[in-house]
Length: 333
Length: 221
Image (cartoon, rainbow over all chains, first blue to last red; front, side, top):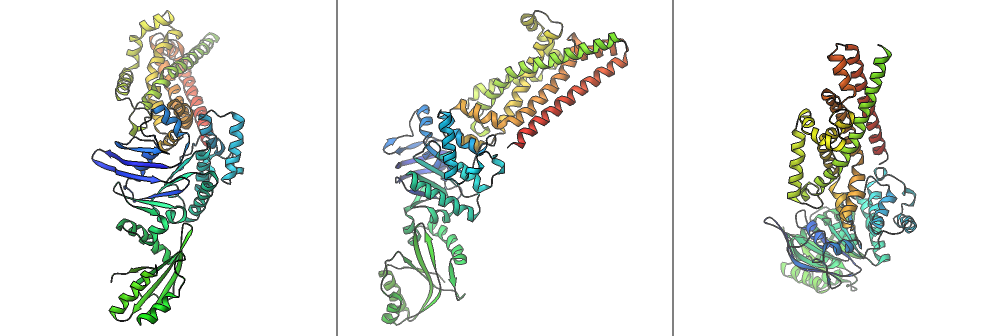
């Protein structure tokens, strides 16, 4: 299911929550929408998921316009949209299994089919033994698993994840993201992930759009944006991430501040670049730290270095790196 | 205390129970739809699922007017209605009419506030899944609010026991009637004492049972 947004606008009073968003979300992919609190993420997801109508603009599912449908048709369409939330939003009056049964009950599935599918879905999310458990006895991760099973009950073609991992610890977050990725592949889902966590985008998404003040400021492949962030907002998000990465995934053997960060993307480089640059431009390169960052399914090699030599040669050396397709970031002193 | 008096006390207790039981049922029948309507038609921000400001205002006003009537006055005002419905204005049967109508707005407000306590996120989830409004009411709001509804109903029954005692003062029968006619007007303090103790025991039993049911529901969540 491909989703296309045309110039969406939604205003509350004089606040432009969503301010002219046009976006094409490809079919069968995990698409991230990242933004800070107040960037308009929640409003945008409410518009895409037909919970709210835009002031102007259009929403298309596979080229069929959906935002102007009659309320009755919207209700029917929603039955094939799955959604999971930050706070899980499970029914406390129902057991885990009965929660999963709810969407099928309202779609009037036959009882036996509901029973069978509840077992199947609880198995998929790895909670087959907790079908009769009251919701309050489940951990956060288990609750989100039940919520995922419930969202998948009526075989949706779209799954919205609204800050689905924001209330979970990092380990559980990883497990839930792995589950979503797995399910996405198996069920041919279009997944839209709304988040403020760059880790989520890095670990799960194929493509990402960066939302700021109700506008899309940047969008593209995740690895592309990680390698070449164009806007300040994206860089800001990435900087939070790299400070984490330094702690966990980067090994520094010198704590002295380095001026340059080299990023090796994909397998673009198959020549011994560093030694070549050293020889050609007569500079010294001191490697202070290195590591690998996992971005979705891509790996980005990162190296923190100092380059010493004449200013002229240093600049040439940097340009040479860039010609080889290596991203060079300069730390402003 | 003579056997005659004991028989009288027994009979009055039964009358009170009858009045309270029937007026609880009828006030629920009147108040439940009103309470649901009050919640459903309130603005989105207050948990409404189908906001209807004017309707909400009208029902709210009627409920408030009925609730601000002192019960004794309401009873007298409703005598003609009692005559139409049960054919008399005196006795247990006649008292059920004003009791039910007096308690209905109270029930409506209690139901409304219980339903509004339901987590809006859960209602939103139900909406995303394509629930119709009636599915949200009957499959989400009411079940989710059930422990709180049970507490509300308990409170209603206890209030009705108090009201029914008051209704005794104007010819309604029951324990209140007994306490006034024998205990107060004929200086039978012992009869009054027994009547009050029985009322007290009834209240305790209802409260205990209500708490138990509510706690049992919470324990299963």
